[in-house]
Length: 344
Ligand code: DOR
Ligand code: ZN
Image (cartoon, rainbow, N blue to C red):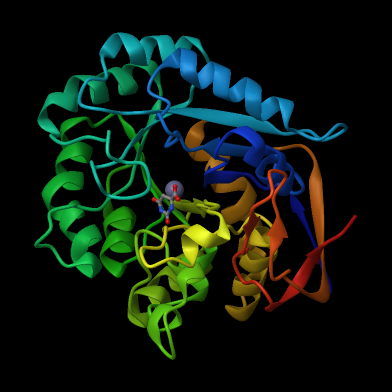
């Protein structure tokens, strides 16, 4: 097959950042995605309906002319989030709330430190028909970084899903066979996003032959047995799994640093890389479901009406991208060949 046409996909998890960076990140995603779920971990985080509305306006101002793109906004849960704020967020068109355990990842210091007090907020989300999006890793120092996702399922996720049965929960950027299995066996209303890097890579790609900071993200890449299970679930066509790139730009000097930031900036090649994975799996017929159908169905939103076409035409991801404000970013898969290319 040399060409694939898909209903226009959406990205159900990404980081646009703010300010000048929007002039890079928003066009890069809008080139092929119709909508994106925008993560709220700015500095300071997007904790209120008002902040989400203002952030949405800044994103909309960065959408190129003649391009249809809709940012779908989220608010950041803290120990102090109230039911009233959730209602206000719903009224402002915010679709979901993001829960970061405090300290789990980039700009998560203001995240949630105790789950128990948040159950009224989870109930409010369910009542309002909003989704709960979860960064599922425990953060205690003594827990090995490769076990943090699995521990989160056992200690927290099972309880959230059981105690609020009508809440829709997205387990974001899953990385382990335990997470994939949990999602497959969970009650209705539980789904997961999967990134290109967790389908393409495993921890050897981070650590063998030298540390590769541009493959460092959180949750961290796992063993190949986990990668294989993630590949198998997307190839299965299960509706519980959908596209979420977790595209997360950091300037080059902050990635290539003695304490490098977590995040892979994949917007330049994301849909093409997913196509590459599905082709490797002999499952190109399942790509449209994963990229364009399962997400809207889970979120209760219409499917996009436009289409995109990918053609078999190998190209090389640039080594570096200059940012409007002067810095640069090394994109995910920099200098490597991607077999599929967006047409037009
Ligand atoms: O690798 C990551 N980068 N994981 C996250 O959870 C956050 C993200 C970021 O904001 O940079
Ligand atoms: Zn993320």
